[in-house]
Amino acid sequence: MSLELLIGPMFAGKTSALMARVRRYNAIGYNCFLITHSSDNRYGHDAVINHNKEKLSAFSAERLLPLLESAAYKSAKIVAIEEAHFFDDLVAFVIHAVETDGKQVICVGLNGSAERKPIGHINELVPFCDIITKIDAFCVHCTEPTVAPFTRRLCASDSSKKFVVGSTDIYEAVCRRHFHHPN
Image 1: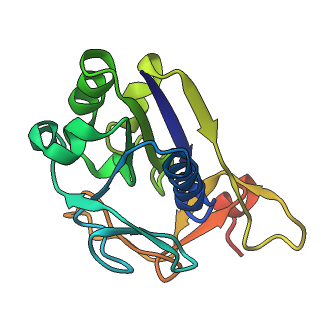
Image 2 (image 1 turned 45 degrees about the vertical axis):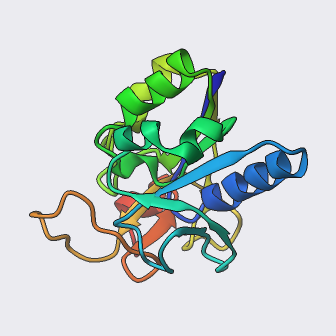
């Protein structure tokens, strides 16, 4: 039983890193239950899909707690949650999975919003986790590979929406300088 957080800005390779972990566990016979949020349908449904359009089958859900009763959850040794920041019941589900059911859980999500504020509940899991891995992207504006720890929104957001799902059409990975001075 353990909890790993894999966090970072958009375009850092978090989904690809998760997919590699799941494939390695599958290769040694571990049953993995891969979950993604139903609102993330940028590239398709019922799959975790990275920006290169590589995909792994996944269970798509709006809430996690009802999955505790599913056969897929019960038979899994590894529970991997993509876009973990979207789930309102993330903390209760993860603590139950790790500490009551003895699962190994990997949560993947953003380290902060485009406003550099906590997003969802993923940061609340820090006191409970065994491993935190932060992956950074490269700044899209720098002419050399400068670390981009931040996600910047390219357009004004609809303030009525809690999350704005998007890709390179809405967001970019930037360094500190280009977060404050985009041009």
